[in-house]
Figure 1 (cartoon, rainbow, N blue to C red):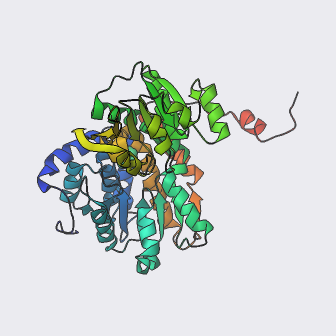
Figure 2 (figure 1 turned 180 degrees about the vertical axis):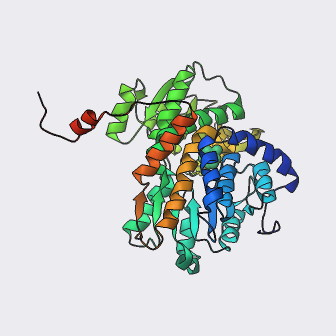
Amino acid sequence: MPSKKNSDIKDPSLAAAGKQRIEWAAREMPVIKLIRDRFAKEKPFKGIRIVGCAHITTETANLALALQAGGAEAVLCASNPLSTQDDAAAALVSYGIPTYAIKGEDQATYYKHINAALDIKPHLTIDDGADLGTTIHTKRTELIKDVIGCNEETTTGVIRYRSLEMEGKLRYPIIAVNDAETKHFFDNRYGTGQSTIDGITRATNVLWAGKTVVVAGYGWCGKGISMRAKGLGSQVIVTEVEPVRALEAAMDGFRVMPMIEAAPQGDIFITATGDKGVIDKSHLKVMKDGAILANSGHFDVEINISEMEKMSTKRRTIRTFVEEFTVADGKRHLYLLGEGRLINLAAAEGHPASVMDMSFANQALCLEYLVKKRGKLENKVYPVPPDIDAQVARLKLSAMGIKIDTLTAAQAKYLTSWQEGT
Ligand code: ADE
């Protein structure tokens, strides 16, 4: 068993509290439980070392325990400096899963943690944003020979791995777990939708009813956030760059306009685009006094924080996760939440366990798939095998006590024939 001293966490005495919360999350993760029970019997990861660079939460802990039950030597590190739950990290170490993650760690510590986790020389990696993979591809290339493959959890990471592939520099196979239907339809939409509102509410205690909420980006995350804000009585404005998505937002009943027009109208701004500079100097200049700015995209690049600083005479923390910027004219204050990092994980607990159950079931089954396909896959970004996606959906439905119809033989034939028409 790996030694406990091979970890870097905030406080080992938080382990008992973390274990209780991990058990609580497990109650909402029946699919992971089934997979864990099977892994415990079949040991698909015997002799396999796995590094997971993930948000260190109670849900991730349940995934790691399933991998450990399957015989893996698993080590975790944070995929974001502000998303770690220190009690979950302490519990993981007490379960014999070395963990390198401290909430609020600086950038140097963040990469020190990634490198420390990589020292086990992984066969499999789990990435959430591709920082682990880019570290391996640039600074730890000696590890590549041992890597069977990697699962990528999030949209931003899949984009980065695809760029690596397009430049011909990808050195091992990637499974785009994010792109599984049982991942992004639910995690990105309902998980981000609910937990983003939760994070902003916990940080500020704002009333959503009657507020004008500007949501930047109408991908699956933006759709979920807009839907939930509307449900709470906010008037939602969506900003987009892609015409089809903009049209979809308009037909879903939202006002759609460029950010420069939305900027003076919004009370709360939420970015979920995956791109940088979405809220920039020109927008900040025309925002109302009291505007609240939060980001739900993977990286802290969507709100131009250095411009916010430049245009302000004062920056102070007014509540936990709320910073007040006094704009130079002295007449306006802008409020930045969670340092512009993923607000759902910085100020709340990330996506609820029930949705992570499906995302992490995909993770677990795709890792098993990578082991089975060892040496047979090319250095490409692969989709999740459709039978894994269907299996996750079936298991989740069954856990929820929902039955569905099956096609009759005649119906199945009809769907694959062309003869019957008008
Ligand atoms: N990403 C979003 N929410 C998460 C959670 N609760 N655990 C791990 N990763 C997440």
